[in-house]
Length: 172
Image (cartoon, rainbow, N blue to C red; front, side):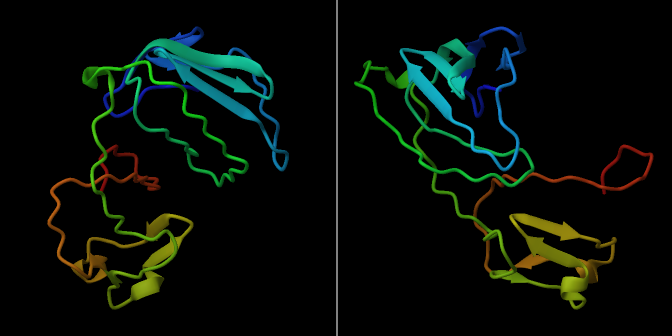
């Protein structure tokens, strides 16, 4: 899929829903084979090709200058042979350019509890692995995970998932 994030916008190629362009055909090879993706963004048009055929994209892309984001939605992914070629500038004005990068600090290193204060029961309540912090904590304040330095920022980004079988749709 190709879709805009963090304030960007685009008019997706069909098939689409909202501002998301879904692939016209499934061309991805299964694990452990490698897939070849080619992404071209030029003059406000974005095109994604998978294993030699264009499958999705969009027009009227705003921002025309900015950042590239690669992601995996929940599973492990490896990238290799990443190549970026900057195309000649199209003279995108500031209103068509992504805002300047903010100085974010990662609070979690993706592997362990360095920089955190574990509760008394420690790793029997909290597990750290592959960019996930998993907790079996209850409402007991003795099971809270604390960061070991003051945090002066007022904005945090994180993903979370609640695995409870509770029929109520109210998260803890």
